[in-house]
Image 1: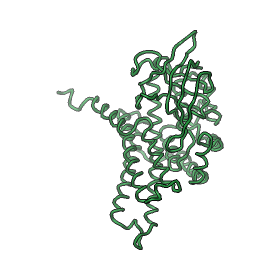
Image 2 (image 1 turned 60 degrees about the vertical axis):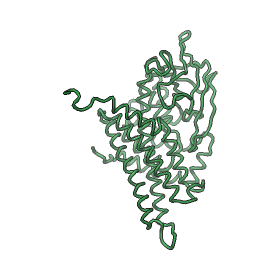
Image 3 (image 1 turned 45 degrees about the vertical axis):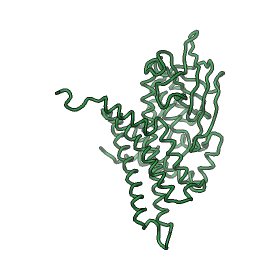
Image 4 (image 1 turned 90 degrees about the vertical axis):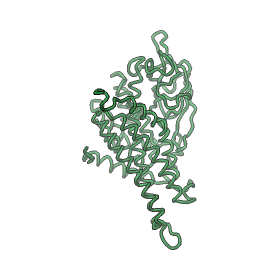
Length: 385
């Protein structure tokens, strides 16, 4: 495995680090999150000008042609600064589905608009009863007079308020939890019969619950009834990027806590000189390094298409959830009462890590998926037996 970044990847990392330093100080971020949809349109246009919105898209579509490593570099730096702009929702989820399954006409219309910062999108796949399961869908899609009509409710739609276009996962055939019979449909956010209830999640990101009543879809993404494979693939890519974002947040949280322990004095000495606290700091560092190692393994496995890519990705997501709980809790405790206040950034990192844990399956749910995958795999020597 080669863990050295290319010159272009180092340039991406450095440019984002500068952006975060100049635009995402604690008070600046609070001001951004307080805006109408929880992010800055001005920042989004800067992303377009700097080419960040083009990174995962193919060169023939006007993109950078980047892979998992490029996305990892970008998302990790975003995590360090708690960047609030909806890169995950618009570029990786919505844009990823378009790139993987939309017609050439749809791609030609929408992908350049995403790259140019002109189009916001969202992917509506979760429902109240889903409990993270991608296949648990009751929203329906029926063809009437040659048009697809969608009815149902979706929850926790990331960027659902700002999105101009939404891809909806609906059931066109089969039973509620079947993998087959799922169709992905592109709808206008302003369509008649589509209603959005907006709210803020724990970390300040905006999400929406969406009700669809006889909403006419513009197009099918992928093939009718065969949307599960496409959806699962893009969610895996987003899960990997989200874990990179978590690593950036964990590293920043560790650095802040270490600095505080070096400067906060008690009994005339820095509290970082106390052996008991040093042990806790080491545990935090070790948990962060575990996430980093699993992230590198998963990124390489996904990029190379190895057989253990799915297992590596699930193990990574579990570790992110566990590390976020450990490091977040220790960071708050080591900062004392200050760690609980909104006047310190520590709590905002912890809230963000809490949301990351829940997106695409929390640690407990993902551990169950991991166990199922391992148990289903052929055991060594079983053929010989």
